[in-house]
Each structure stands twice: as C-alpha cells, then as structure tokens.
Amino acid sequence: MAHACHDRLVVLSGRGSVVVREWTGPAGAPVLVLLHGVALDVDTNWSLAAEALAAHYRVLAIDLRGHGNGLPVAGAFRLEDCADDVAAVLLTLGTGPVIPVGFSIGGMVAQLLWRRHRDLVAGLVLCSTARNVTGSPVERVLALAMPWAVVTASWFAPFSPVGTDAIAGPLLDASLTAAQRRAALAHMRRVPLATALDAMRAACSFSSHLWIGGVDVPTAVLITRDDRVVAPQRQRKLAAAVPGAVVVEIDGDHGVFLADPAGFAEGLRQACAAVTLPVVPTTSTAA
Image (cartoon, rainbow, N blue to C red; front, top):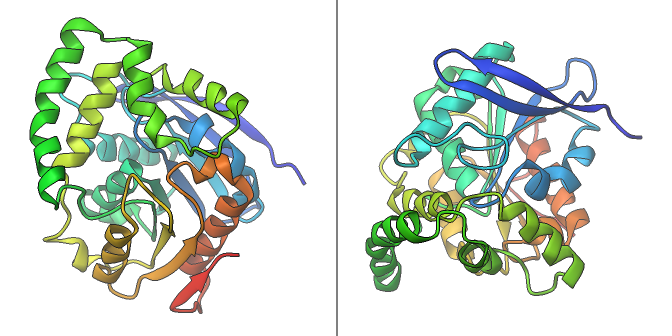
C-alpha cells in the first residue's frame, strides 16, 4: 500500500526556509526524522526505504545544510548547526519528541540532537555511523589535511563535478549498476565540492566519546557489515557505548541503501521497531 508523500516548505524564524518531505503514515504513529549522509540528500539516501517505514510511522526527511533543499551554509559547516536546524523544524511543526534516524554523518547529527535538544528526542536509530572516525594514524593525518582541502576547493573548484565525483564515488558500492551510479552521482553533484569537503572535515572533528554513554532514550544501532567508509568495528564500539542499545546488522557497504534497498529497509524496520516496541531483543540480525 502506497502512503501519501508530499514536500512542504517550512519557514524557520531567523534561519530561512527548508523543504521537509513527509510520508503521513498511520494516524498517531511515532514520528521518525531521517537524516542523510555527506554529499547525499533525502532522495538519494532515503527514498527507497521511506515508503516501507511509512507503513508503521509518520516519516519526515530533511536535507542538511548545503545539501539538496537544505538551508544554505553560512561560514563553516557545523554539525551543531545541523542539529539545531532539525530542532527548529520540529518545534515549528509541533511534532513533539521524535526518533532521529541518522545515516553516517546524519548519525552524528542525531547524536548531537539528543545532546542539545533532549526534550525533542524519544529514541535514536544510528546507521553506519560512529562516535568518531579519526582514531588511526592514517585517519588523523587525513583529518589534519581536510581544512587545507576545503580552502583549496573553495578557491579553485567550488562546483567541480570531477571533484565532487572523487568525494562521492567511494561512498557508492561497487555493485551498483552503471545506471544506478549515474543517477546517484547526478544528485550528489548538487552539493558544491567545498561544502562536501567541509562536511567531511566536520565529521573528522566530531567525537561523542565523552558523553554518548549518557544517552537515556531507547537506541538501536544499524551496522553495515561490509562498510569501507565507517569501519564496522567503529559502529560496534558506538553500540557498546550506549546503555542498552539494540544491534541490528545487515550485509552491505556504505551505499547499501542503493545496492540493496530491500535489505536496508528491513534492517531499518527492525531497528525502528526496537526503539518503539515495549519489548525488544538485545541483538538482531536482518536477513
């Protein structure tokens, strides 16, 4: 059964306007807020899974700053600003507490939404994400180099398709068909190269080590077992750090939402059920 889906323009006081996509779902259902990964947008990250979730939930999806139909970036890209943007949308719409469902960098935004706006968060679903992504020596070197890359991109190629492809390409599974890859890259090229790099810099600077253990809402962590972008062991460390977190594991790389949309949707369904149903298993594995 198809569920009604529409875009609505939401005016945020002092911030500007943002487009929110909504799947109505059943009356009185819990509210999910889908938060996408870097260089992605609502269409690319969520359109193939949101319909399945709308069978059980009211689903909202928001493009982050500088991405798709999100707010423009003013100055440096900050994950804290993204979390505050989401909070402003929820307060404007009067949703009450919601369940942020964050993929990759969107999972970091979801963590910050809980930390900065606890009264708006009823649960967390964290997908293909981590407490930080700069632990190894190689990762630390890349993190230190990222600010220089951002400046260089802003000077020479702010909208370079070639540069954006170099950032976006590794985020997509090798198993995608040529047509799937072309369609995904067409969306991802909407993000200026400097913005994509600056978002990656923000991700490299993020750490929730000192406070993620204080999460006091039902939480599920969806782990992509074959992930080359956010190492599975990092995802498992995040799950272990959150008291009582339910773990759902699925096969797939960081682009599983395109390569295996059915498997991704089933993993999401299990993870969302784990934070909304009164009794849940401690560990689950999606087929």
